[in-house]
Image (cartoon, rainbow, N blue to C red; front, side, top):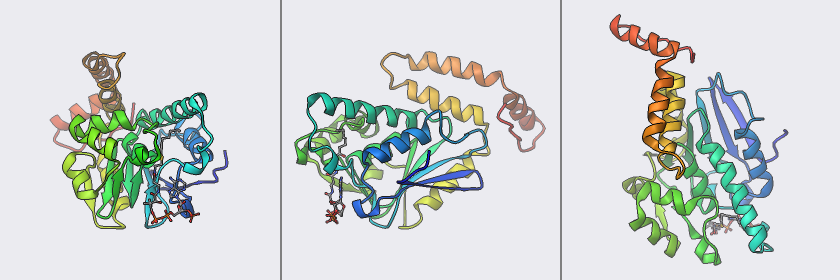
Length: 260
Ligand code: CO8
């Protein structure tokens, strides 16, 4: 698929995916959602060799300022629910991506933009980033998982306040609440995300994939997270990587993982 709204740059095993609609503050229109679906879905790039993916927004002002408001003015109950479901499905692909995905939030992360950042495994915010779910200002609610993931990250007390007031919070408050992992000076969010991915890349890749699966299981109503952990743990013990990791520890050397 030829991407119109995503810029992809690969360097040293790290893919940086930039939402590139700067004139609309990188708002997620249908085309961009289709491209995200393609990228994170089965037909996207091979992930075997990847350390991980960084998601960011073009320009200095916005990560993503939301779903593209101009596109959903004509929605009704049926088409609105369909659009919400399609968006949720795309963000589940990101949440379940087998390699680490980090959002480098370089400005406004509002509505669908905050939801996109929350679907990533971690968030690094620049100090002038702003987060919020302002949908109630438009008379709607978040539709791409925001009501659920915001509670998962910051708890019901603050989540329901932010969802009802539509208030924006700055990077420092987002960090204090547990919404973001790190706050860094402007322009350094992508660099910090790379540093984290390079650190993770030294670990066993299958173990990292199993961490993603087991952690996500906690939030699935039809799965028991403890059972998922037992299964994932069993899978990791059955790998060459585990034999290598244990041998390296005993021989007092650095492990060389092969992802097998
Ligand atoms: N959609 C479309 N265009 C946008 C969006 C958006 N979400 N945000 C900004 N833009 C456009 C503006 O229209 C403007 O375009 P133009 O120059 O052609 O008029 C351009 O980007 C620059 O924006 P502003 O002039 O408004 O810039 P300011 O610096 O004055 O303000 C803000 C920046 C505060 C970020 C402001 O743009 C804003 O409030 N944007 C909207 C934020 C918002 O409400 N986001 C939530 C959208 S709803 C949503 O995400 C629902 C997700 C779930 C959908 C479920 C399926 C139905």
